[in-house]
Image (cartoon, rainbow, N blue to C red; front, side):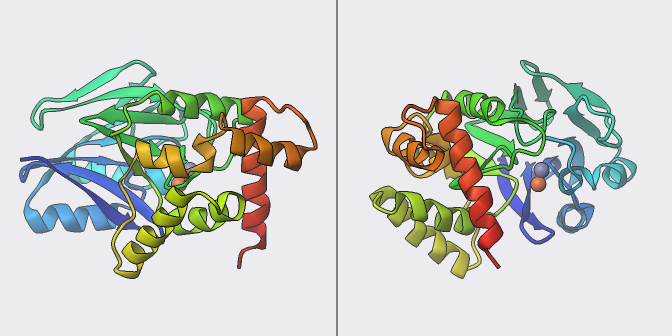
Length: 259
Ligand code: ZN
Ligand code: FE
C-alpha cells in the first residue's frame, strides 16, 4: 500500500512524501527536520530525494538526508544543488523498484531555468512552476519560457493530481478573484479552500481540471484572460505568452500591495 502525503515545512512549503510503510521517496525536502521526524517515528528508510530546482527551500535537506539515510538525490544539472547523486534530464524516466514508483521528468523552466517537474502515478510534482490557482514568479525565465512550460502541463490528463511545493492557494485565490470574480468555479473553489485552511487542512493536491477552470495562469489562451491582458497592456491582440506575461506582472504588482 503506497501513501502520498504533504509534510509542511518552513512557513508554507510542502515536502511531498511517498511511502509503503518501509521505504520512502521525498520531493523537495528543503528542511530535513520534519521529514526525519516523520520517517524516524515510523521506522521508515529514505530511498531517494527528487529535486525540482535549485532554490534553498527545496534543496536545504539534501546533505543531511544523504548523510543520514544514504539515499539517492535526483536533481537537474545545476552545481548549486548540493549532494546530487543522479542528474535528471527532460525525457528521463526514473524508477524506484522497491516502492514500485516511476516518474517521467519534464523540463518546466520559467521560475528558474533548471526547473523540472516529475510525473507519475497520476500525480504531478511541479515544484514552484504551478501553484494552487497561481504559478511561480519569473526569477530566471521570461514569460514565453514559462508559458511554454505551462502549455506542457496543460497537455496532461485532467484528473492529474497537482502536488505543488507551496501552500499559496488562498493568496492566489484572492488575486484571481480581482480579475475573474464572475467565474463560478473560482468562487466555489475559494469557499472550499478557505474552509480547508480554516480547518488546517492542505488545499493540495488539486486536480489539473480544477486548475484549468480556476487558475488564471493556465487560462492564457482563454478569451476572458486575453481581454484582461489587452486592457492591462493597452494592446489589441496580445499573443498567448503576452497574456501570460500580463497576468504575471499584474500578480507581482498586486503582491506588492499586500501586507
Ligand atoms: Zn523556488
Ligand atoms: Fe520555493
